[in-house]
Length: 253
Image: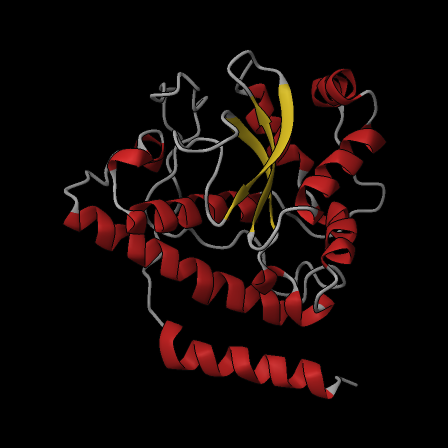
């Protein structure tokens, strides 16, 4: 049975959504796979290009149940993430950005754009990647092959990697993201960014090509975990889509 605190929290989110965040966003069929291009930071995009339109969620809202509940997924995707897509397109129109080109081009020189572009461009990119980084729960979920070899080489073991990555998410003060990324020398690294920043941005403290993204904003987990971010992160490993991470990693080879 839901506690009074949890019920109130759900009512608050539902009211907020209905009052201010409800929007309609057209979904295009798929994001085109682009040829590799280089950013201003000399960090290759390795064949992955992100458009400005929100893409369809690659699974049903309840597909990640027992780790992320359906209500959280629906609110997160259809309200929070959809708003970033709408707002980044509004910013692009105001700032004369060609949205036929990948969003990564803008992120690479985000210091030249407005705060609206930075917040919403980052929010849209981060969420488009986040959905792909997850899949329905798998027991014994772990990477394999060359990706596992690289993780072991850079972090001594998979367990140590998970600990360092989890710590990056748990210790991020306030809202933000935890990342596994490759730097310009293709070394794997772990870090975190505040708000909707990411390693592609020229203003970011960590810079590189993102391989794995974890959202640690409260709205990503609060309905199920309340303030227990550590529990959310510990359970999240069960739904990581290592095949997708492997695809991103392979593009660097």
